[in-house]
Length: 396
Image (cartoon, rainbow, N blue to C red; front, top):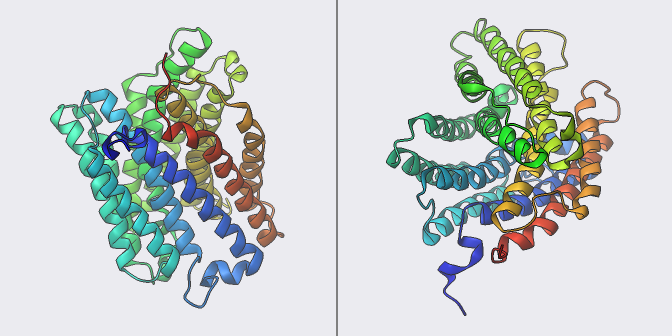
């Protein structure tokens, strides 16, 4: 048997992180669908079992700090390795951080969101990812990429805040979902780097970059919004309006970027329009969040926060994970035919889940269907992309 340090799955960060992210996301969304089928609102609020497992806190925490962190770890450490020319992970260090991340997920599965120590495991994994990314960026003096270090630090801070407020009724407000914003910052910042050249290469058109100011707003705006909402208890009457303004500016700037990047040929390339759609859903979430923070009758936080989550962790994830996995394993960069039925299910899930706050009435059934549908999407991605992630790179 070959040395474990030379296993293909440990050769670069995206391979094990994407594999674990898809496996855990399939399980987590399948369990969440089961909560709505078995117990409805009572189970979702109080937990499916007597121990309190799988209540809304578990769902919010694990989709953000479990699925979201694994997705970011795969993208960011692979991208930082490419930017800096330095290896991100030693196999032993990678296995250590992966093991801590897995231990945290298992602890939350077995014990729910009430005990404190699973959060320590979750934060330890995030600190490991932060150390790896910061080391690459600082050693290479790539100061323009420091935003990623700040965003990862924000995730650690948000997870710690979640842990401290896990028994506080106020967690159901914005603080329970605050960790989404650093992920938004990183993925929008990566998107403005990736989408123009990818579009140019796939469509045979000149790249349509949007410049440093757009990049600054897309990457820095969500981080500033994170800081403002984190400090909301200090000035409760002022911070929401400031946050609404920031969210609106980022949404408008992102809309300008999409128009700038757009070409009619995008519709002929599913992986491209998946990226456009994912960014669009995130921007809708930011605009919706701006309306809620401004006090407009926009239906509360459920809609905008799920728009942010679905846009990043489902739509953008399918496009970007398929692109990265195919490109880095020597496969054609296109959406495999076996993922096309999953794409139809994904679009139905996004539309159904975002319409739910507007058309209430069948919530438990509808939530079970959308959660189950998303579990099937993640499972399809795992079955298609998973074999690529554990196999050796194909020869050119």
